[in-house]
Picture (tube, helix red, strand yellow):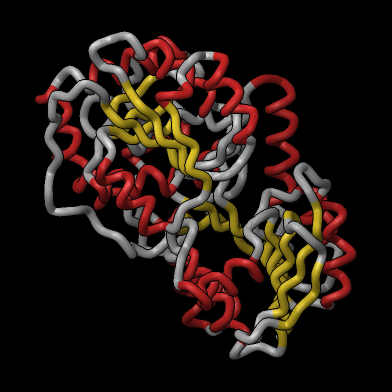
Length: 400
């Protein structure tokens, strides 16, 4: 069997080499996913991973048996440019790990079998959004796309809400490699508090909103310093920090080893997750990790967050893109020790409620295995199976 996995970013060759040499991960479950793909290579004729965003183009058979292909594209790129790379591999099975409409349209015209493995939300807001979502629903409902796996319940519900069949949609999650710390955090009065942002450094992820909120709080009794962990347009936001006169309050740290990010979360006074609605989040691992660190979260009202986090119970929620509301939420959290501790206490229970039975690697293995037991297992874990607490997702949490 010849398997091809296509992804937008996440250079497999770089990740496998770094983990093999140093053991260091740059994001949650990176080693788990690298190893899972290598395990597939041991039982198949060929497993190729094609990555669009790589520093250079390459084509290499790695020591772990995986055929790594880097397209050498820079962002943004048209996924249609990947079609020739996929065709060249002559796959029997195609796993598309990105919302690539043109690639999937091409795939359903081919003789091989295809699934989509996503970590994205879908919205039908506005006329353009409605038209776009209907196109997605028609494509994903095509019987030649056998399954759609999406990260988390809420992201799968977003697919259902645009018309994708719940009978072919399966929520997946990463394994619980990290669990909540035993120690609950309490607020300590201090001259300056530390907020942590971990994720892509882009406008749609809300980093500009956080910088402006830090500027608003600079001369208050809840003065905040901000650590920014992640890659992206760091020069642009460094310039914004300078313009806002908060260079002394912000530190851009770039990518860090995953274990270091967890340590930074534990040391921080709060974790801020400010994603704007236009960013197609699934459910970011930053929130899972903050819950494990027991560090209170200030999060936007992104649709993918609101059914998982409850305002004033396990997080403080603010209207995405609203800088005054974000600053007010941070100020409130850091001035109310009772609220602060209650959010930390609730984090473990919230983390437990977010756990799902389908893990990323097993989902792929079951589809590839294709035995009667494997097919039954996939059938039993569909969104429509009745095993998921969907009632929690029908009413969104109250937003201030």
